[in-house]
Length: 70
Image (cartoon, rainbow, N blue to C red; front, top):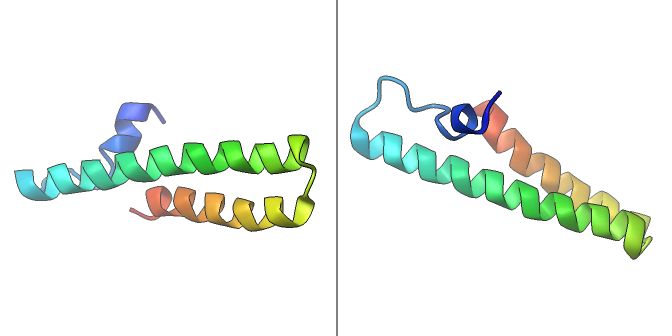
C-alpha cells in the first residue's frame, strides 16, 4: 500500500469536509506512528530498557491500528 493510499483511507465518496478531516487524521496517525516507532527502536537498542520499549510498542501498534481500522 502506497503512502498516498494510506493517507486517502476512508475518503472515497465523502464530501470535501469529511475527506479533508479524514486525510488530516490519517496523516497525523502516520506521523505519530513513525515517531513512536523511532522511540521504540531507541528504547530497545540504545537505552536497552525492554519494559519501556514494550509499553511504547503498545502505543506504536495502537497508532497503526487507527490507520488499519479506518
